[in-house]
Image 1 (cartoon, rainbow, N blue to C red):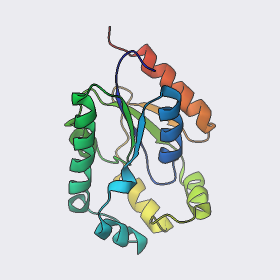
Image 2: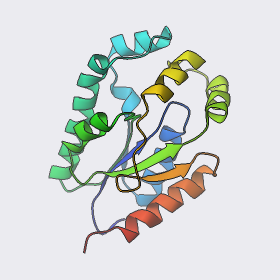
Image 3: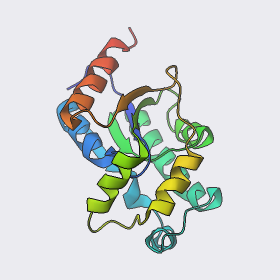
Length: 173
């Protein structure tokens, strides 16, 4: 268990491994994990299932809900890991309304690897390379001052371990 509580965002485009790595990270830290995809509205899920990219308006309630979950954990001084694409800087700003000290792991990877991963995924509502291209076009990668960026070609356990180490090195006194 960690000495300090953290609210952690694992972000990246679809196929980057947010849920898998988020679960690994939460397990290694002994904290709760929330998959942001589970908080999309039925309308958003239907839209993505038809291969239609979400708009900023589509994402508004979803991001507000996730910010509320971060705020609940912050108020209880409990750590949590949330997996959420958080593609744009303003989306991350909205999430930071739940915790201004949000720690962010950015999973970055090339289109070919992402597409390969998406093509083998079963039972998920995110469909199609056109949706991946839309996410990549929307992506405003965080800089080093905002997040730790790690390449998705690394093993998931390595990514979770590197972020846990980074988190310990950035603990507030």
